[in-house]
Image (tube, rainbow, N blue to C red; front, side, top):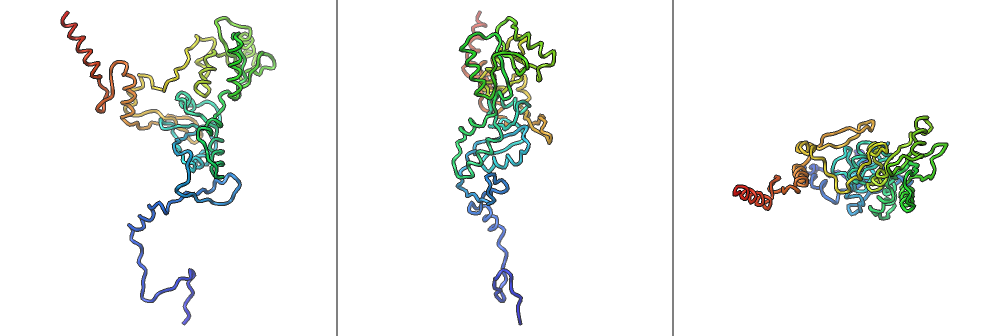
Amino acid sequence: MHHQRRGNKSKKVPNVRLRPAHPDAMARARASPEHTSCWVDDSQIIGSDDTIMLGGSCPRPFKSVVVCATGVLDKPALFKLALELGATSVSAFTDRVTHLVAEDHGGAKYLCALERKIPILLPSWIVESHRIWQHGDDVDLAQSVAAHRLPVFSGVTLCISGITDIVRRTQINKALTTRGGTYVKALERPVRVTHLLCAGDAETDKMRYADKFNRAGEADPPIQLVWEEWFWDCVEFGGRFDEARYQARMPRPERRATEAFVPPPHEIPDLQHRTTAYDDDADDDDELVPVQRLPAVTLQLWGSLLKARGYEVARGGVMLSPGKAREMAMQGREEAAV
């Protein structure tokens, strides 16, 4: 009798049946680090067709990064590279985000990151870091961030009006050009200037000509006449603020505070239930998404706002500090004695 040959070249032992492995044993095998691997597939951007298996000891230079993106065409592919580098990707902008990826200025996520001084980076930050890492070289996170920031003044051609101090003009020129902008001395035809940086109370010839060019439609886009504070706030925070707050025809604004961002007091009660995060829909339009916030964070916000009044966070709540309580009690006794 001829037996059919077994395709896997195994031998059948008479009167012996194989019993499936116990489910617990299979679960332990799946959970074992020895069976865990990271496959780099469909993302070989360096021209190799090989599939690379990364061991558990593979360095992850982005392991502390929580990345969000806005206005990026292929987010899934970009987030996959970030994941391989060790980052966590999120679609909604929350207080967990450490880095924002964008190709242009503007939008709710962009402004939210800008106000919090969160680095705003080009997609090349992830792509280039992944290429270096995949080749086997080390990626320095701080250096990669510095090298791939979205230029603050890309597309800006700036002219100065009312600033006569040569040292200050030189400082503005240097800060502008090192951040992707273009500096011109004269406002002339054909109009290339996009921003006229103003200082002083008197109206200048450049301001009058800028208004004239705007009315005639010669400036496309129209020239933005902004106070000097707009420029230095953009430099300080690392991104481009909306010019509406800095219009030179309006009262001169104060410089933005540089300390850590704290929501205005009237917004604090809403944080007991939710905080606002910024998410992108399928068309990448910014929309508001409610995200649960831990009570501890709410208490911290309340504590930071009321600290100057003598309150502190203790035992899961905001209460009057012992020192302030004694002070108020003493004042009460003194008033009662009068």
